[in-house]
Image 1 (spheres, protein in one colour):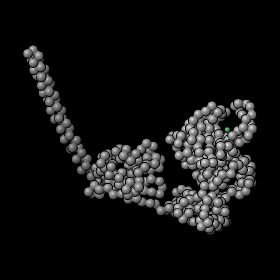
Image 2 (cartoon, rainbow, N blue to C red):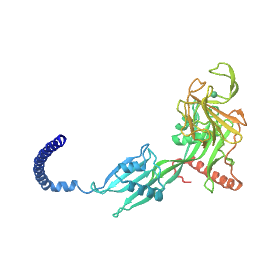
Image 3 (cartoon, rainbow, N blue to C red):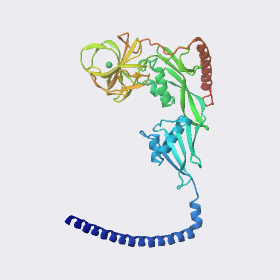
Image 4 (cartoon, protein in one colour):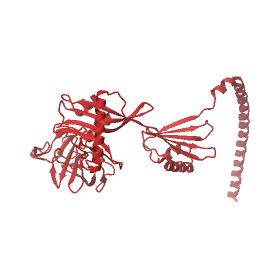
Amino acid sequence: MKKAKYIIKKMNVKLMESCKKLRDIHVLSRLVLRLAIIMSVIALGVVLFYKPARVAVFKPSEIVSSIDVKSGDTLSKILKGKGFSARDIDTLSKTLKKDANFSTLRPGRDRFEFIQKDENQPISKIVITNGPWNRVELSCDEAGTWECQKIDIVRDTRVAYKEGEILDGDSFYLAGMRAGIPAGILADVYDLLAFEMDFERDVRAGQKFYVLYEENYASEKKVDNGHVLAVSFEALRGNVQMYRYVKPDGHVGYYDEKGNGAIKSLKRTPINNAKVTSSFSTRRKHPVLGFTRAHKGVDFRAPTGTPIPAAGAGRVVARSFNRGHGNFVKIRHNGTFETLYAHMSRFAKGVNVGTVVRQGQIIGYSGSTGLSTGPHLHYEIIKNGQHVNPMTVKLPAINNLDAANKKIFLEHKDKLSGIIESLKTNPTQVVRL
Ligand SMILES: [Zn+2]
C-alpha cells in the first residue's frame, strides 16, 4: 500500500513536471513563430528589393562534385558516401560491370564526377574517368533507370626516335636521360636490355644507342608514351637489337634482327639500373667471414626496400631464413633453372612456398639480413643443381617465331628500320606506324 501511494505521488510529480515543460514549450514555440514572421518579412523585403540581381546569381546550373579514388576506396564506399541506397549501389555496380566491364578501382588514376541538375535534385549523372583513354558515363532518366555508356577516347599513336651516346663516366641511365628518352620508356628499355646485357660491364664511353617508341596523342596534345618499338645498343660483344612484333594471333614479343626471341627465360640482372658490387667467382675473400670462399652469385647494390622482381616465371620453392642468406626466396623456373634472391628485408605479400610467379613479379624487398655488409641483392642462378655465372650463362629464349611469323617479322623490321632512317634525317616529322 505504502509502495502504491509512493508510486502515485511520483507520477503526480512527473505529470506536473510535464505540464511545466509543455508550458515552456508553448512559450518557446510562440517566440519561434514570432521570430519566423519577422524573418519572413525581412526575407520577402530582401527578395523583392534585390529581385533583378538575385535572378542573375541563382540561374539554375549543374552542380558537379568530384572524388579522386584513393587506396582502400571501393565503388560501394564511394557511392554510399554520396548517399546512394544499397539497392542503387547494387544496380549501379551491376550495370557498370555488364555494360562497361568496369569493376575494380585504381587509386591515383580513377576519378568520379557526380552531377546534379541543382542542389535540390538527386544525382542524375556519374562520370568515371579511368585513365586518360577511358570514360564511363552513367545517366539516370526521369523514371529513375540508370544507363551506362562507355566512351573510348581516340588515341593518335605517333612514333618518336631518340639516340644517344655513352660519355666518359656515364651510366646508361644518365646517357638515356640526356638523350631525352622519357623515364618510363628508359625503364622499359632497361628491362629489355637486361636480358642481354650486363650494365656494369657492357657499358663503355663511345657506345651509341637508340630507341624507337610510341607517343599517344589526343586532340593534338601528347598524353602519354606507348610501347618501345625498337632498341639498339652497341654492347661490347656486338650490337644488341630488339624489335617489337605483334603476331597475327595477338601475342606480343621482342625479337632480334634475325627474328630470334629476345626475351629470355631469365634475366641476368633482376633489378633495373643496379650496380654490380660483387661478381660471381669460384674464389673470393668473404667480406664478413674474412676467409676465401666461392661467391655463388652476383651482388647488386640496392637500397633497403628496393622491390625485387622474379627473374623469370616459375614456382616459389623456398621462402625462408638462414644465417648466410638471411631472408631469401628460391624459384624453380623449369626442369633446368632455379634462381635465388638473398638478404631481403621482407617478403612480398602473397609470396609463399608453392606460389606461381610471373616474370617481373615483385617477390620481396632488398635489405641486409644474414651475412651481409650492407643493403644489396645477392642473386644466384642454379642450372641443373650447379651455380652458374648469371652474367655469362647461356639463357634460352622463351618466345621463338615459326617460319611464317619470321617472314612477316622481317618485313615489319624493315619497315621500322625505314622509319628510323626517316626520323634521323627529320626528327620533327609526324610518323605513324
Ligand atoms: Zn653475394
